[in-house]
Length: 291
Ligand SMILES: [Mg+2]
Image 1 (tube, rainbow, N blue to C red):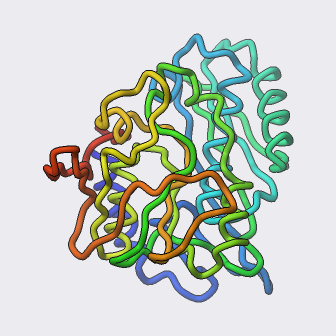
Image 2: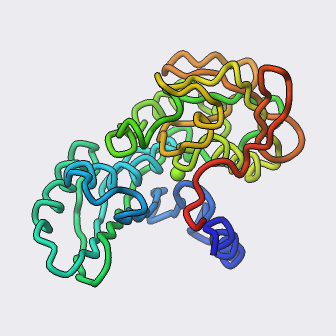
């Protein structure tokens, strides 16, 4: 089953969640009220052979496992509080201590200390699951995927493409600081945000779909890493772990280094407008976990 289809199935079953669940499945984090506080919750799996190659060094595996979940906290404009990590490890695996030590170090470095976890053994690849807990920005509150509207500018931090080939997919810094600065500077003018895990095309499409509008990206505006020359790679390689966000039309983003790459318009889907003015559907470009 494709991940997208499975997620839609889960979302459909979660429609009736209410009460203290302020945001259910379908965003980068869920938002739950616990006591008088709002809490961000997210979990993510890292599977050997699927999300990393068997020869990736242990400290990189650990970093990636933790950073992917912390990046989801950043995508909401939040600050990480702590995390739980579980590992399903192959029979006879000799590096469990080193792996958990490395996850502890990575999590501490991201101000998201590991506070618990579990290990199981199986006949299969390494599977790491990190559940991160965080708090929304104190004044802006959680930044959702649903807030984009026609007329918004679309921005991205950093550069796009080439994540796997360069090794950045396992060495990136979650954009927690940048997300908080955006909340500080823009407040309610920061309309929607996502972290780029599956590619800027597919992930922009998620904001567009959640918000009920379309997004148009301008080929000539896309910031690409050195060695990336094709917009298909910039939008489809995935695992950039940059922030893609939309703002009110006249806003100037001064608090972080970000590039305006397009705009929200009426309609649906995410479209690349190339140099010649042709429109390409990029909603399905990029990484589908179930494909
Ligand atoms: Mg995400």
